[in-house]
Amino acid sequence: MFKGFYTVASGMLAQQRRTEMLTNNMANANTPGFKADQSSLRAFPEMLLQRFDELSIPTENGLNLPYNKKIGSLSTGVYMQEAIPAFMQGDLKETGLGTDVALLDVSMPENGSVFFTVAGPNGETQYTRNGNFTVDGNGFLTTASGLRVMNTTGNPIQLTSDQFTINENGVLTSDGVTARLGIGLAADANRLIKLGDGLYRTEDGNALANAYNVNGAEFKLQQGFLERSNVDASRTMTDMMTAYRAFEANQKVLQAYDRSMEKAANEVGRIG
Image (cartoon, rainbow, N blue to C red; front, side, top):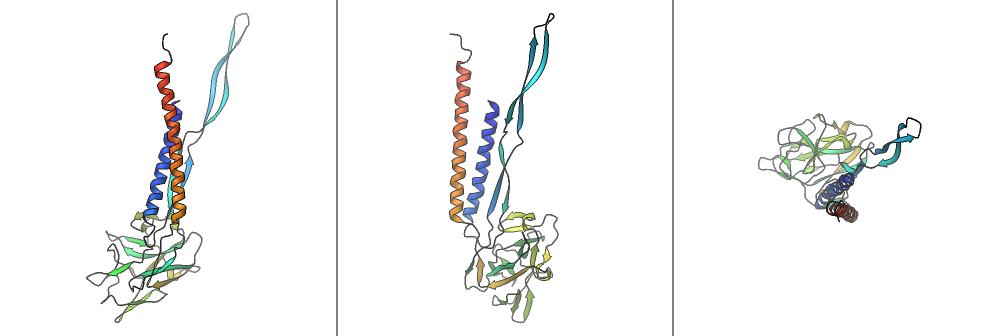
């Protein structure tokens, strides 16, 4: 009976975490460059149940032989193993703002993707697909959250004004200042660690390869555009309803177990 409680509770926890992930996806449906998370549910290892007993043989002195009989396997629950971003290309939206830049994947290695290179709060190298840039009071090109955008040599890009042009090869020109936006290539984007706010970092802290120098990686930059989130709102809503119904079903089973335990505690063994 108690095994049933644990199994049902694990199912409820898994569906709760899946609902939280889907809710976060829906909340970021309009966030530029956001990559929707996908979950995978895994079952815990099954238990093999056996019944141990004795076989009595009616001999002169009596003989009891121990034996076990297989009853069957029992599932021990389910859990949400991980949430992995889906790095599919999002649609491009024209904004007309010169500070907006979108990355467009033309041809990428399997599971590969390219990212803007930015300097994190502690100076560490981080990556993003959100090209909603601006120019701060010191003339540095920054993300909307204030992180400085880096060039190909790993230095921040400083401008004299917010009037600049960026060609499809990433070359920025403004009043005599010329720089090239740092673009990193993740050969397997699924190995990146998600930090939140559309930012990622590598597992070992090392910088990604310079995407301009990698054969087989073709991409271009579009000034005046933003990459939309790749969240499919209608499918996400359907998945949220499915997760809710699964949670509700587990909840009803838990209530049935609770009623059975209450009956056992109050009625079984009662002296009439």
